[in-house]
Image (cartoon, rainbow, N blue to C red; front, side):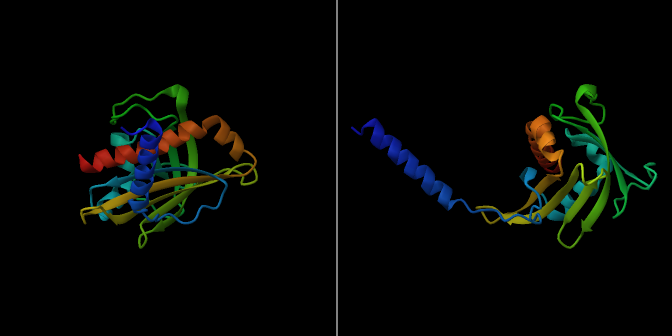
Length: 205
């Protein structure tokens, strides 16, 4: 009969072997530019184009997104536009829940006013060739600067089936970055992953 130490060693070796056989999914996000980064991702059984369209369809966010409850395209005066199609230079009025609301959510889900945040941001990149979009917080850079990237790419699973990888990352810089990480870091990480998980359910449902 094998001793407990030998069994533990065998289990450890098997776990290490399994991990070495698991392929690393390449990221479609650009290299991170800051020391503080919050990430979320999911593999979705849906075409890349469909997932990309869902990411840019901000008007649909209240129907499924437990993190970003509203994301309005606005003009330079922060007045929401009738046409909500995203474009570079557009301002965004973003209403978020940090931590995220319990899933599932829909347009009728009431907010938690104690954890609701409203920010004004600006779209800086819509890369239709590489399926990447980015927006930045409109605040003095010397106090706090952020950039949030979202990207979609095609991955192949173990059975040779094509699926979509959704990734999102926000990078924080400036003197207040460490404060944001200390106060909201854990809740932000939960929120980013909740959005990724909810997008998967929305697309596959």
